Image 1 (cartoon, rainbow, N blue to C red):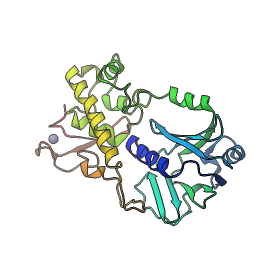
Image 2 (cartoon, rainbow, N blue to C red):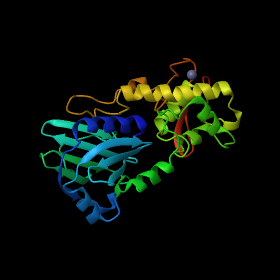
Image 3 (cartoon, rainbow, N blue to C red):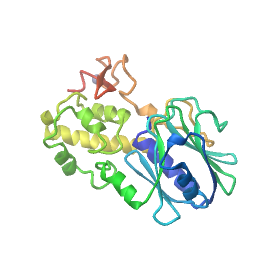
Length: 287
Ligand SMILES: [Zn+2]
């Protein structure tokens, strides 16, 4: 599932290459992928262009050239965006499926054709993702439901500490909850907690200030490093320039169950379920 670093990577890539290209045609191949009327979606996009692409949490927000029109995109579990312009390919999002750039294929649910012959494909194996046309108010509504941006100035030790005050339950569920901190998913919560020496099952009220500090720093460091390496991809999912998400090399705990912990070199990494998600931890390093 794409998380903040993977979303940020595709947003950065698209901003460099797709802006101001006039949209010629839209082909919706699976109507339910579009929220709202399909007809309206097509008519708004036609002759429009992408003016600016940004990210909030795991949402992609595309400002269109037409005033007060935006696209909200969420990739959910398996959404992929692939932009092809002649021999140039920009791809991002879900990566665990073998990717073919022989498109469209049976997982292609939306195609946006640009006037310059380039195309944007939306693939989604499990079909949980969506695209929606909204006004600025619609964008604000999405934003209002999301918590702190862990890469923004609003995410600092003080705000993080305040957010944790009077919260019940375990720290992993808290970090996954998008209304507190927006953008973290299973990979980056497990990696952050490991880096901060904190068990995912720890009750929030038992965290010391020192631990909160460590966790705050771990979240920031992990996200910055992951964006630097274009996120985490689990196969040879590459774009035409041969790039793939290289953060996989830096993973210390995610999908490492059954292996010896690389930090303490004593304990075998275990996997349990917390907050409904497969959760990895080292019982020696984390407490
Ligand atoms: Zn360990």
